[in-house]
Amino acid sequence: MTTKLVSLNNRSNPNRLSVASYLSAAQCAASLLNRGGVIAVPTDTVYGLACLAQNKNAVKRLFQIKQRNNDRPISICVGSIQDIPKYCKIGVKVMPLLNDLLPGPVTLLLKALPYINKSLIPKTNLVGLRIPDHPFMIHVAQLCNAAIALTSANKSNETSCLNIKEFKQLWPDLDAIFDGSTLGTIDPMRLGSTIVDLSVEGDFRIIRNGCALDYVKKILC
Image 1: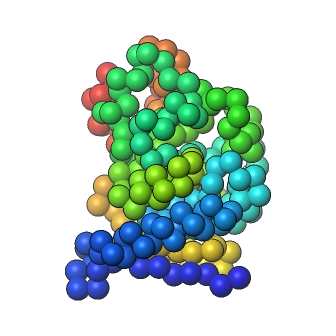
Image 2: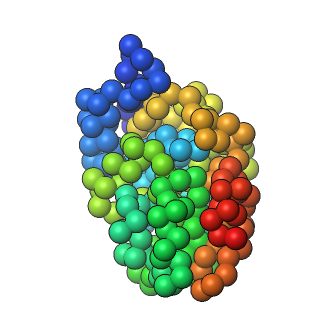
């Protein structure tokens, strides 16, 4: 398998996305995902590995690449808040919070609807849901018009990555790497997203502190 390496950067200004490169790359990413591919992508926190959530073969391959135990859940990413009810049950008290928490470096644990691919959530009825505050990921999810399985681009129990060279050992197993340059503006400590359980109406639990802990507490407390 030949791995595509796609740059999202404007060579004259590496800190800005080229519009042409961005649109072309997003279409390429969506096409690969729709064909069952597994790709590496930039997010608002660290680099991630992604495939279509409902594609069981792609999810199986994702677990294998990451060397992750099959009983550990993987979160999903969607393109807009309006997409969330397609995959999760949302309480009336949770709905008003969504616009404050998303997009952003936050993973919401919500009750999964029955048809969600159980290989993503093998031992729970909850699914982690993200909308990364990154234009590339949002556009890719919108082009796919489907949930994307999303997990950090590293082998299980290893350090998360802020640039593509840090997970170079995974490149041969991937269909494409989308290089958004070095990340870390929001999450320089590689903490990942803050995980908050909102599955119980009127209550919340912080499952992982992550990089947005203070902001999440401000919204929920």
